[in-house]
Amino acid sequence: MTPQTPIDKNLMTGGCPVSNWCLNEGRKHRSVEKLIEAIADRLKSFGIPLDRFTFSLRMLHPELAATTYLWRRGEEIEINPISIDLTGTDTYYTSPFYPVLEFGQSLRRTLADNPDEFPVFQDLLEQGFVEYLTSPIEFSDEGRHVYSAATKSPDGFEDWHIETIGRMMHGASLLFETLGVRMLAETVCQTYLGKKTGSRVLSGKIHRGDSEQIDAIIWFADLRGFTSLSQRLSGEDMVSLLNDYHGALAAAVEEHGGEVLKFMGDGLLAILTYDNELERHKACRAAYSAVFWAVQSVNEINKQREEAGNEIITFGIALHTGRLTYGNIGAPGRLDFTVIGPAVNLASRIEGFCSQLDRTVLASQDFVDSYGGDFVSLGSFKAKGVEEAVPLYGCPMEHAHRGCIVLGKDSPVEMAAA
Image 1: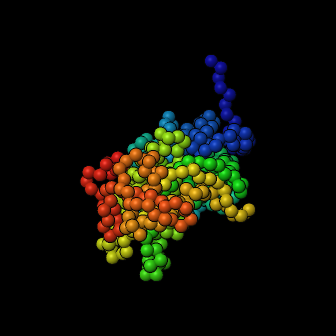
Image 2: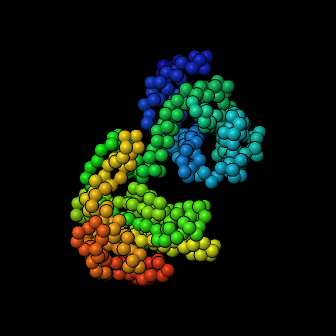
Image 3: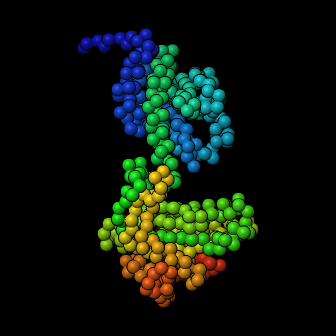
């Protein structure tokens, strides 16, 4: 057997193999988890006894403070979103990442000598780890992120192991930053445009006039008494009410495969797309189930709001289906990715009858025909901008209680949505 050539440790710490790998191989990886896996494998190939490796990427996200990627020898990488609610809690202050992130310190500890310094150290000791290292990585915007490395080797890490890991992470910092910027763009687009629409924008659909024809169920909702509420409530209380209302409705739409295209103050426009008649029927069923999901959520929220002495939420939802123009509309430097067309206009007009007819849900003839279930005919009504009177249908299980739907125990839609 041919003996392996010993690694030149001086060359290793000189940075050339590390830099070359980052520039030539590392940049090919298109996700943080793949890059972490590749770095761990590369460090092992250098002869470093790496058994556990983590990288925590701080994020600009409405719900997350960071995402931590955990690599363990012989296991698939584990991705752990860190809630923004954990910032400032004991969990954060008792983490070895705290002094790194807040003060830029690096820590290198023999775990048996420091078992109680951080709660995680005892867990690592029980798993057989011997030495632990954590250190910061700074991006070009001076944002600070953190990595850690741990080994089960009885001798722990050698100094050249630590230096090589540091050089590798320093060399890869630009790669991590590039991936972080991409994730930031995805987060911003998905947060403000929706997942599907955000993906379309990131794929290059950004030119004014870019559009296509789609078929979709239109889910149009509006808060009742918005003007009156705005006059009675403080701005802070109004924002709280709107967030409760939009949060419940948006979750219902997304849970049933739809996408919220825009929040318009007290209004919400969502769509559920389909490609053929079978999918159209399924999309109608999903949209109708989403209504009841939303209503049940708002009813629960209203119980809490009443107990706290706050205004309850009442709203109307229109269901319609048709062909829409989906794309970029606006000024050269300020675009809106949305849907337009007669079907959208009619859905808006239908929702306007919810208050007049004391109904939470109203459906069009097209929706009822596609859905195929029992609906209550409420008659035909003249809508602004529509030449012929519009037939409107109500939910057969609906009976009003302070403007909200109350479902019977045997509601077929309730069971289908469960």
